[in-house]
Length: 89
Image 1 (cartoon, rainbow, N blue to C red):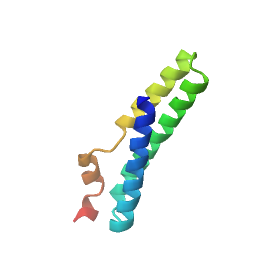
Image 2: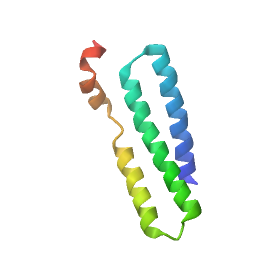
Image 3: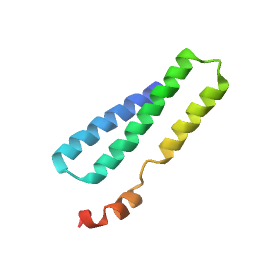
Image 4: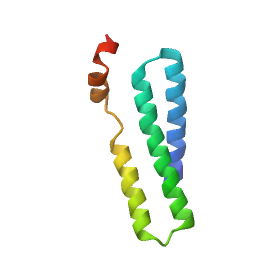
C-alpha cells in the first residue's frame, strides 16, 4: 500500500534527521524531523482507518485531507533559510 511505503520513507527520513542533528547540531534539522514525524503520524492514522473502518468514507477523506495538509507543511529550503538566517552565518 502506498501509505505504508510513505510511512517507511518518513521513518527513514526521521532517523536520518536524528543522526544528522547529532552530528551537526543544526536546529533546522529538527524542524524537518518534526514535519516528517507529523506525516508519519498521519500515515499511521490513515492506515488504521483503512484497516479497521474502511467503509467510513468520511473518516477516510478526513485522514487523506490531514495527510495532505501536513505534507504541505514541510518547510521549504527558503523558509528554513529565512528562519535560521542568523545561525547559518
